[in-house]
Image (cartoon, rainbow, N blue to C red; front, side):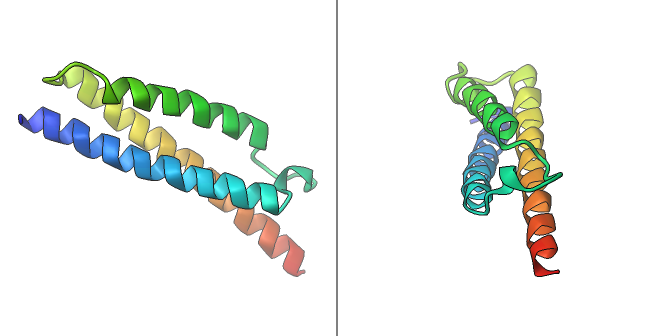
Length: 103
């Protein structure tokens, strides 16, 4: 397995982990009724849509022909970053709602 193949595989594993984290955060956000909070961000429908689009991209990367190219490595790196950003955005929104409900 080449260095690029190992890198792509690592990005895919990390992306799968981020996707699972997003799913957990979406579940918590729905349980907290985050979308009914005034001024709450992000819009859960948009996040769910983004999550679905990114999951499809991840599926495409998993099924990309091997050996991987530099282009596939860059796509996998970008996807990992986008999934991480979506998860972080959800976490921040949940923390804001929890803090707001404490006061």
